[in-house]
Length: 622
Ligand code: F6R
Image (cartoon, rainbow, N blue to C red; front, side, top):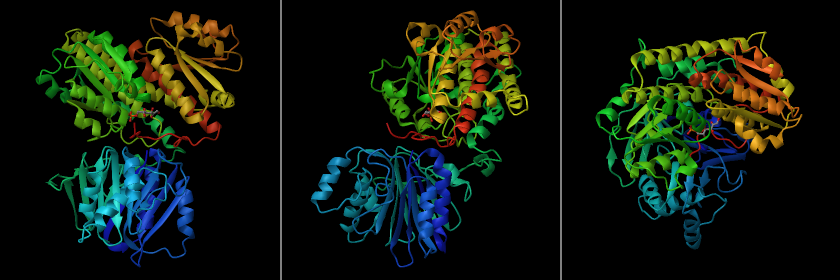
């Protein structure tokens, strides 16, 4: 979704380059236009805005023959919601005077009525966006006050707004002031020496500073070269110590790989190790993060669990359902967050809600979880981002510790989410007295070797014996593919299909293998390959029967199977082998060749794997 970058400093510097570089670090969030506003030497605000990639914006800026040093600027990558992705709708948005400029991430829900009100007062609008009302609202408050107090004007304007926003605001009358504010949608202040930064996300700041202040909802940040003040929308000052980010800059760079996605797929063994580190010791499980919720008694009367999540995180939740029900014998429902909120869910203090969101900022998930809390449900959050919005809605937070994931599609965060959910399932099983010490030692032992097993899959794929890339190249011209699986193989198939469609734009659908014959099998012919997840399991024979049904319809069959399974050869045209593990853990291994397959198909088709069309990393609007 949209990305914000802002800079204010005491010495004149190349603000344009700082903003453009910051925007390039936010590209992964997803966008379709970009722009910057920089304070010029003659006290004017210089705007550059372009539809399309940041390269278009850079080209426009380079055409400007008089690049100059400055102290102040804001920039933005826009993911269109209201108004087409063209130059005029790109941010920053100026007010009527051109002296005030605003960047905005989110949706102003009452923008239509505000726009009419402002137009009736004589404000003239240039764009079709909801965001532009902010520029004019701030303008009205600013020029309506003899002191031209920008901070007060921003606070006054925002009090009229409903919806979600993170914003950055600058004025040509205040060369040493950058104002930020947040109500949903992430916004972070980076603290420097004699200079301050504002950004939607940490990677945009890492080059300049690791000391950050994470804004909470309803907060305003006043950035001046000498320091930063936080306050509420109503002006009450807030004290907060900066957080130090321990990501290294390399973690947010490609490190020699052609795309972040393939780097992150290859980082999965390490990501998984970090998810398990300190949480398994000597065959025992330790989740200190659960102590507080345990002691509060909130888990005592839990009768059911609802996992609320979207997209890939939803698939992780589906896998968790199998594990938690098996180990804790608590009924688990997995529901996509966008539906949860509007289905009048039956939740209360006896319903544990588990929110799975790697970004911690997905609007659908946040809104659903907020509603569940209002009904008294205890909440556990599984997320990768420290202090993200979901953490403030949760009674306990389990961090993935996966490191930054820059590729728009989730890969390592998926594997880490599944692993953390397994730990939570084991924890609940142990709490309920359903897992013996011996079983715990077996489960944790199997979990601990998974990073090595994933490494083996990757090493093979990176060697001359790799069969995934050649297969992907052969499949690159396919129009449609079907993925099937049973039990935990079913969400694995769904995730395989999602990865393929997201980055290669090939139509792909996942089905429960047994369900295919009830209708969807009609889709299959010799032009529609089938990918079957048929790793060792109690439903293996059933999946093989389903594969045979498809084979009889001439479809090309690709099977993900367990090493040593020679029998499957007679049913498959291509086999992607993974090491043997316990059935419940098999998705963590079976997903890896499917990720690699999707990646290589996308590369063979010439797709931009890191930034697929129409997608955004954090979906911060409902
Ligand atoms: C798929 C993908 C999305 C996200 C979904 C939820 O590759 O990345 O489907 O999984 O938007 O995002 P989070 O986990 O941040 O809530």
